[in-house]
Length: 375
Image (cartoon, rainbow, N blue to C red; front, side):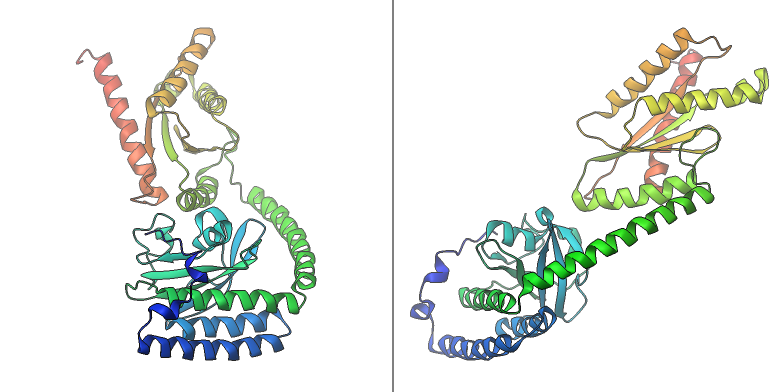
């Protein structure tokens, strides 16, 4: 459910509360005053987060709380206090994170059921205890972060809970400014620059290690099996988190044994290299291409708006154009299977390859039947 309470936060809520609810609200306000005093004495961002993570749970009687910072287009889950681990230390893009939604929209996000709210990346919540939640921005003008609270049972967050949590976020904003957070953030930028330089050096070292371990196929220049799995598994995880339309294409060079038997392995290698070059011509640099071994190739790519039939037809057209101009004593032929990655029913990379392999063999069998006159 989507709730907009920006105007409600300015309404004197005690006018509609029972005596018991008023007492609870007043106790919460008393606790909030103590929190304000603690925050006024805080001299570091870490101390502010320590105070807030505890107070957020107490003020809302929730099972979890998180402190989120805005970090160059990402939500950085800087701290948490919860009955089970959540996302402390992790970063998520603003546009797929509920903390990012609260900051971008500059208003609280009230979610009674995380499994049905369209703003929630539910795959990130499936393994947690979270059923309901509230996320409020830290400062509504140019938010610098967000505070979230979570319930282990389905819970309709009340206006009082949201208003108290937003009040906590507002005083947190003041506390952050009082400890000269901008100077601290500048220091962190310098630290991140150093870390980035270290990362670049580590990446160079990793690339050298990748080269040393021969993650590329020597004959074709494509990834080999090890290289493909090292790269493609990470790309598949990213595609799953960001819901990028992704597919895997399994390609088999037809008749390699016949070429080897009739014209020798040297021309067999020529056929393999030719097939690899034709595959390269039909895909982008951002796609992940590999020779798994022998006559088998695989491609992991963003599907965009291309249909499976269109991709296969594009490959077949390139093959036909090549054969028409080729002076080799053999024609190139490839059987192809394409399978789309279903974000709603995620599978591992091995299984995705197996499914595409089965579709490839289906096409190969159809070709054999066509040549034998069965169809």
